Image (tube, rainbow, N blue to C red):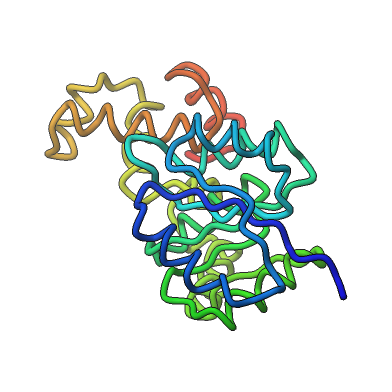
Length: 217
Protein backbone atom coordinates (compact mmCIF):
# COMPACT_ATOMS: atom_id res chain seq x y z
CA UNK A 1 0.00 0.00 0.00
CA UNK A 2 1.31 3.47 -0.92
CA UNK A 3 2.43 5.80 1.86
CA UNK A 4 -0.24 8.35 2.81
CA UNK A 5 0.11 11.91 1.58
CA UNK A 6 1.51 14.02 4.42
CA UNK A 7 -0.61 17.17 4.88
CA UNK A 8 0.05 20.42 6.70
CA UNK A 9 -3.12 22.50 7.30
CA UNK A 10 -2.75 26.29 7.45
CA UNK A 11 -5.86 28.37 8.19
CA UNK A 12 -6.62 31.12 10.69
CA UNK A 13 -9.98 29.59 11.59
CA UNK A 14 -9.69 26.66 13.97
CA UNK A 15 -13.16 25.52 12.92
CA UNK A 16 -11.89 25.02 9.36
CA UNK A 17 -8.89 23.03 10.53
CA UNK A 18 -11.06 20.90 12.81
CA UNK A 19 -13.52 20.33 9.97
CA UNK A 20 -10.77 19.19 7.61
CA UNK A 21 -9.32 16.87 10.24
CA UNK A 22 -12.76 15.34 10.86
CA UNK A 23 -13.45 15.04 7.13
CA UNK A 24 -10.15 13.37 6.33
CA UNK A 25 -9.59 11.30 9.47
CA UNK A 26 -11.42 8.29 8.03
CA UNK A 27 -9.23 8.13 4.93
CA UNK A 28 -5.94 6.25 4.92
CA UNK A 29 -4.74 8.03 1.76
CA UNK A 30 -3.71 11.08 3.79
CA UNK A 31 -2.07 11.80 7.13
CA UNK A 32 -2.37 15.23 8.76
CA UNK A 33 1.09 15.86 10.19
CA UNK A 34 0.63 19.43 11.38
CA UNK A 35 -1.50 22.54 11.59
CA UNK A 36 -0.88 26.28 11.83
CA UNK A 37 -2.90 29.47 11.99
CA UNK A 38 -0.25 32.10 11.19
CA UNK A 39 2.81 32.71 9.05
CA UNK A 40 5.28 32.06 11.85
CA UNK A 41 3.55 28.86 12.97
CA UNK A 42 3.35 27.65 9.38
CA UNK A 43 7.06 28.15 8.69
CA UNK A 44 7.99 26.30 11.88
CA UNK A 45 5.56 23.47 11.11
CA UNK A 46 6.86 23.21 7.55
CA UNK A 47 10.37 22.49 8.78
CA UNK A 48 9.30 20.25 11.65
CA UNK A 49 6.83 18.06 9.76
CA UNK A 50 8.21 18.01 6.16
CA UNK A 51 4.76 17.63 4.54
CA UNK A 52 4.16 16.52 0.97
CA UNK A 53 1.38 19.09 0.52
CA UNK A 54 0.37 22.25 2.38
CA UNK A 55 -3.31 23.20 2.35
CA UNK A 56 -3.30 26.99 2.71
CA UNK A 57 -5.88 29.79 2.69
CA UNK A 58 -5.44 32.87 0.49
CA UNK A 59 -5.83 35.14 3.50
CA UNK A 60 -4.68 34.67 7.06
CA UNK A 61 -5.51 37.06 9.85
CA UNK A 62 -3.54 40.20 8.98
CA UNK A 63 -1.27 38.27 6.62
CA UNK A 64 -1.21 37.14 2.99
CA UNK A 65 -1.37 33.44 2.23
CA UNK A 66 -0.02 34.27 -1.22
CA UNK A 67 3.13 35.81 0.25
CA UNK A 68 3.44 32.91 2.66
CA UNK A 69 3.20 30.40 -0.20
CA UNK A 70 6.14 32.00 -1.98
CA UNK A 71 8.10 32.04 1.27
CA UNK A 72 7.33 28.39 2.00
CA UNK A 73 8.41 27.33 -1.46
CA UNK A 74 11.67 29.18 -0.89
CA UNK A 75 12.22 27.22 2.32
CA UNK A 76 11.04 23.87 0.93
CA UNK A 77 10.92 23.82 -2.90
CA UNK A 78 9.89 20.18 -3.01
CA UNK A 79 6.74 20.79 -0.94
CA UNK A 80 3.59 21.38 -2.97
CA UNK A 81 1.12 24.13 -2.01
CA UNK A 82 -2.62 23.86 -2.60
CA UNK A 83 -4.81 26.85 -1.79
CA UNK A 84 -8.12 25.98 -0.14
CA UNK A 85 -10.26 29.08 0.13
CA UNK A 86 -13.71 30.66 -0.11
CA UNK A 87 -12.47 33.26 -2.62
CA UNK A 88 -13.72 32.19 -6.04
CA UNK A 89 -11.87 35.00 -7.82
CA UNK A 90 -9.74 34.16 -10.83
CA UNK A 91 -7.34 36.98 -9.99
CA UNK A 92 -6.47 35.20 -6.74
CA UNK A 93 -6.02 32.04 -8.78
CA UNK A 94 -3.62 33.75 -11.18
CA UNK A 95 -1.64 35.12 -8.24
CA UNK A 96 -1.57 31.69 -6.60
CA UNK A 97 -0.18 30.06 -9.71
CA UNK A 98 2.45 32.79 -9.95
CA UNK A 99 3.74 31.71 -6.51
CA UNK A 100 4.26 28.20 -7.89
CA UNK A 101 1.20 26.69 -6.22
CA UNK A 102 0.03 23.29 -7.40
CA UNK A 103 -3.67 23.88 -6.85
CA UNK A 104 -6.51 26.26 -6.10
CA UNK A 105 -9.64 24.72 -4.60
CA UNK A 106 -12.76 26.11 -2.95
CA UNK A 107 -13.78 25.14 0.57
CA UNK A 108 -17.06 23.71 -0.66
CA UNK A 109 -15.10 20.66 -1.94
CA UNK A 110 -16.14 17.34 -0.38
CA UNK A 111 -13.78 14.67 0.98
CA UNK A 112 -13.75 12.46 -2.12
CA UNK A 113 -13.07 15.42 -4.42
CA UNK A 114 -10.33 16.74 -2.16
CA UNK A 115 -8.62 13.37 -1.94
CA UNK A 116 -8.76 12.99 -5.72
CA UNK A 117 -7.27 16.44 -6.23
CA UNK A 118 -4.52 15.80 -3.68
CA UNK A 119 -3.61 12.53 -5.40
CA UNK A 120 -3.24 14.39 -8.70
CA UNK A 121 -1.07 17.03 -7.05
CA UNK A 122 1.11 14.34 -5.50
CA UNK A 123 1.62 12.98 -9.01
CA UNK A 124 2.86 16.37 -10.16
CA UNK A 125 -0.30 17.82 -11.69
CA UNK A 126 -1.87 21.25 -11.12
CA UNK A 127 -5.50 21.19 -10.00
CA UNK A 128 -8.10 23.96 -10.28
CA UNK A 129 -11.58 23.88 -8.81
CA UNK A 130 -14.01 22.96 -11.62
CA UNK A 131 -16.23 25.95 -10.85
CA UNK A 132 -13.31 28.26 -11.66
CA UNK A 133 -11.84 26.40 -14.62
CA UNK A 134 -14.26 27.75 -17.25
CA UNK A 135 -13.91 31.34 -16.04
CA UNK A 136 -10.13 31.02 -16.02
CA UNK A 137 -10.11 29.76 -19.60
CA UNK A 138 -12.29 32.68 -20.67
CA UNK A 139 -10.08 35.17 -18.81
CA UNK A 140 -6.93 33.69 -20.33
CA UNK A 141 -8.43 34.05 -23.80
CA UNK A 142 -9.36 37.67 -23.12
CA UNK A 143 -5.86 38.43 -21.87
CA UNK A 144 -4.39 36.81 -24.99
CA UNK A 145 -6.62 38.98 -27.17
CA UNK A 146 -5.63 42.09 -25.22
CA UNK A 147 -9.17 42.62 -23.95
CA UNK A 148 -8.18 42.90 -20.29
CA UNK A 149 -6.81 45.91 -18.45
CA UNK A 150 -3.02 46.46 -18.36
CA UNK A 151 -1.36 44.33 -15.70
CA UNK A 152 -4.13 41.72 -15.50
CA UNK A 153 -1.58 39.03 -16.33
CA UNK A 154 0.35 40.11 -13.22
CA UNK A 155 -2.74 39.65 -11.07
CA UNK A 156 -3.67 43.33 -10.84
CA UNK A 157 -7.33 44.15 -10.44
CA UNK A 158 -8.84 46.77 -12.74
CA UNK A 159 -8.75 49.38 -9.97
CA UNK A 160 -5.11 48.58 -9.16
CA UNK A 161 -4.29 48.98 -12.85
CA UNK A 162 -5.97 52.40 -12.85
CA UNK A 163 -3.97 53.43 -9.77
CA UNK A 164 -0.72 52.21 -11.30
CA UNK A 165 -1.40 54.10 -14.55
CA UNK A 166 -1.77 57.34 -12.62
CA UNK A 167 1.34 56.60 -10.55
CA UNK A 168 3.30 56.01 -13.77
CA UNK A 169 2.05 59.38 -15.04
CA UNK A 170 3.67 61.02 -12.01
CA UNK A 171 0.59 61.70 -9.86
CA UNK A 172 0.91 61.83 -6.07
CA UNK A 173 -1.27 59.61 -3.88
CA UNK A 174 -3.50 62.61 -3.16
CA UNK A 175 -3.86 63.36 -6.88
CA UNK A 176 -4.59 59.71 -7.66
CA UNK A 177 -7.31 59.69 -5.01
CA UNK A 178 -8.85 62.90 -6.34
CA UNK A 179 -8.89 61.53 -9.89
CA UNK A 180 -10.48 58.22 -8.93
CA UNK A 181 -12.70 59.68 -6.17
CA UNK A 182 -11.21 57.47 -3.46
CA UNK A 183 -9.39 58.35 -0.24
CA UNK A 184 -5.63 58.69 0.00
CA UNK A 185 -5.56 55.73 2.42
CA UNK A 186 -7.36 53.61 -0.17
CA UNK A 187 -4.77 54.64 -2.75
CA UNK A 188 -1.99 53.57 -0.38
CA UNK A 189 -3.71 50.22 0.15
CA UNK A 190 -3.95 49.69 -3.61
CA UNK A 191 -0.31 50.65 -4.19
CA UNK A 192 0.87 48.23 -1.48
CA UNK A 193 -1.09 45.47 -3.21
CA UNK A 194 0.39 46.48 -6.57
CA UNK A 195 3.94 46.35 -5.19
CA UNK A 196 3.34 42.89 -3.72
CA UNK A 197 1.86 41.48 -6.90
CA UNK A 198 4.60 42.97 -9.06
CA UNK A 199 7.32 41.83 -6.68
CA UNK A 200 8.72 45.33 -6.18
CA UNK A 201 9.61 47.34 -3.10
CA UNK A 202 8.43 50.85 -3.88
CA UNK A 203 6.92 53.33 -6.32
CA UNK A 204 10.13 53.80 -8.31
CA UNK A 205 10.51 50.07 -8.94
CA UNK A 206 6.81 49.75 -9.83
CA UNK A 207 7.04 52.53 -12.39
CA UNK A 208 10.23 51.06 -13.85
CA UNK A 209 8.68 47.62 -14.16
CA UNK A 210 5.46 48.98 -15.68
CA UNK A 211 7.47 50.85 -18.31
CA UNK A 212 9.73 47.87 -18.95
CA UNK A 213 6.70 45.58 -19.40
CA UNK A 214 5.04 48.12 -21.69
CA UNK A 215 1.86 48.14 -19.62
CA UNK A 216 0.93 51.69 -20.54
CA UNK A 217 1.50 53.43 -23.84
